[in-house]
Image (tube, rainbow, N blue to C red; front, side, top):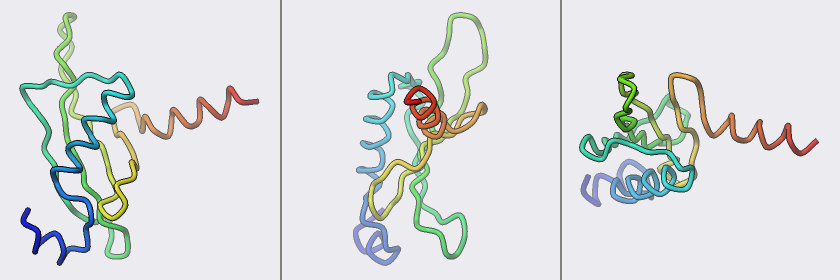
Length: 106
C-alpha cells in the first residue's frame, strides 16, 4: 500500500508496521507460526463507523502429531497500532489472557 492510499484511508500504521507488530506479538506470547506460509495483511473496517483494522492472517506451525494447521488472525488498530485480538478457532487469546489475569488477581 503506498503512502497516498494509506493517508486517504485514515490509517497511520503501515502494512509493514502491522506485520512487524504481528510478528512481535506472536514472539512475546510464545506462539509459533509457519514461517514458510508467512503473513497476509488486509486493511478494512468491520462496520462503517468502526476504526480501520489491519487483519494479519497466519498459519500455526506444523505439529508432529499430524493435526491440521490452523489459520489464525491478529487484529491491529490501523490508527493507533494497538493490539485488538488474536482470533483462533477456540476464541480470542487476548481476551482469554486478560480474563485469566483478572481471575488470578482475586
